[in-house]
Image (tube, rainbow, N blue to C red):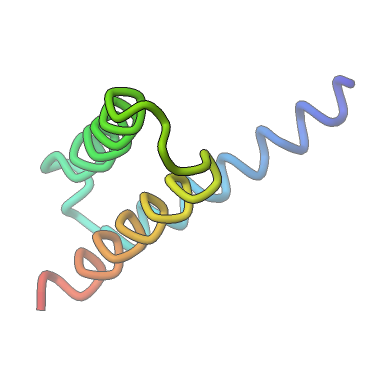
Length: 78
């Protein structure tokens, strides 16, 4: 169990590092807050609408949005 948690923690740290590298200096300007807010809003919307779509589908859509935002940040907004 402890080994699994360490592996999962390592994977999370790796994902965070990738996001920070992709976002570059903009990380300090609030993009992580934007991503967090986006995920929170998606969850609230999903709950408010009675969970009309499967959880996996909402996760896929929000992950796609986050990916697009990170890609845009990595291109300096171009």
